[in-house]
Image 1 (cartoon, rainbow, N blue to C red):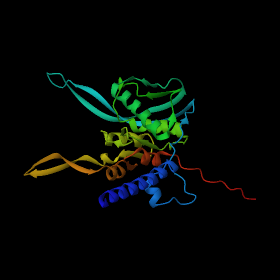
Image 2 (cartoon, rainbow, N blue to C red):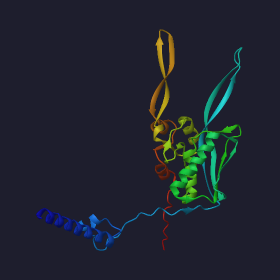
Image 3 (cartoon, rainbow, N blue to C red):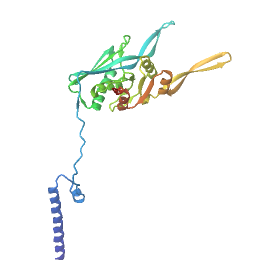
Image 4 (cartoon, helix red, strand yellow):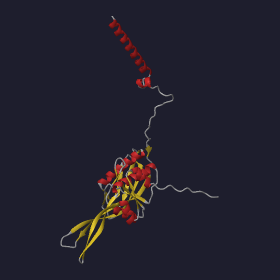
Length: 287
């Protein structure tokens, strides 16, 4: 009998506990019961949520442009001997790149003079993706038109090195800020907004300086360039000279030998800080 009475008492206690638990669940369905029993909510407390940024409507008819440094590859024929030979030479040049946002169907269009390569078209598409994500702009009702005007002697424009510049141009339109006309940039762009390295840095720096610009923005991964220095030795009356490659800092070399400033960037945010036009100085009237 005592065992039976103890069993009944235990069952009664368990039933009472379950009833209390169920009562708490019914009365407070939206919260954790264990938390309600141990930590009552503070008065005036409310849930905090972080809303997503609202989509920004693209401004149709807006445009921006910038000169971009490029590498011109020329094939020169050498007819100095009995056999015909050719060699490829490279030199820097500037091309005009512009972007325009017009009413459309969400397309990315590229108009080039001369022809455009596939890699350049991919860079344009990626630039639009990065700019759209950065600005939270709604581009479904707009077409993005990139236009590139190169030198007459160039037959084709290709390569990814204008990706960062095209992203900057489109962000200038979507976010509504002016560009500094004394600045240019060369670098690739990735989906996360990272700025990647390109080739021909010294040739592009020379073209940038010749165009009158004062600042060239490079990827941090382009911080080293190769400079060829003459190493001369004399053997008796014979002097032998050879070119010795030396790795140097790109910023120091360009600023000292070409005469323009250089800044390194690694993301689209750090790039935008350097390409924005400086704010106009306040004008005060004196009576």
